[in-house]
Amino acid sequence: MRHRIGILIAWMALLLSGCGEASQEYTVGNCYLVVDNSVHQDATLAGAMNPNSPGIYCIIRKNIRGGVSYFDFTDNAGVTSSKPLNAIDTRRTIVMGMNNGIIVGFGTLNMPATFYAYDLECPNCFDPHAIPVKSKPLSISVSGLATCGVCHREYDLNNSGFISKGDAGNKLTRYHASTTGPFGVLAVN
Image (spheres, helix red, strand yellow):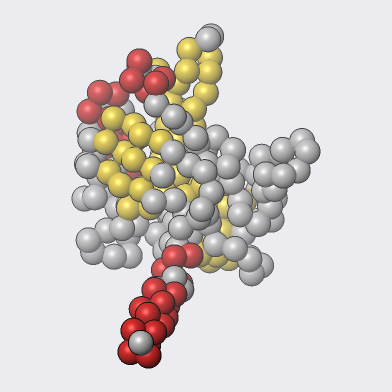
């Protein structure tokens, strides 16, 4: 009996030790998005989903214009494009992070490159519980930095969203993400 209890305690300790730093890499916040770029054929999004061109990041938002829902894409070089949601997109659940915006792209620091998905809101300024909710979106630069216009912190998109300039605080909110290639499927959850 003692042997079984000892084994049980050892297993519990092993499981709990596995919940350290790695489990805090991703947020438990809501984000769910699937974009089939083999259908949309959007070059702006394709650039960010290409593992052979790390450092290209794309902001994705969902907007409605004239009664039609669109995916709006803006890369870190300022190139923008829009694609209307198709029938399959409209049947999917779409939750675009904390306030309708995410950033996706491959980092430049690791080989093979790591695919990242971050929330577009500043993790140190945005308060989803404030009434009214006021957006604190980040802007992204060609050099792979995301900057908050309120607190002026700079976050390194190539390095897990850590603060590279400014006061100490939380790193960027990161979501699980995968891509099957530039003109493949993007999945963020």
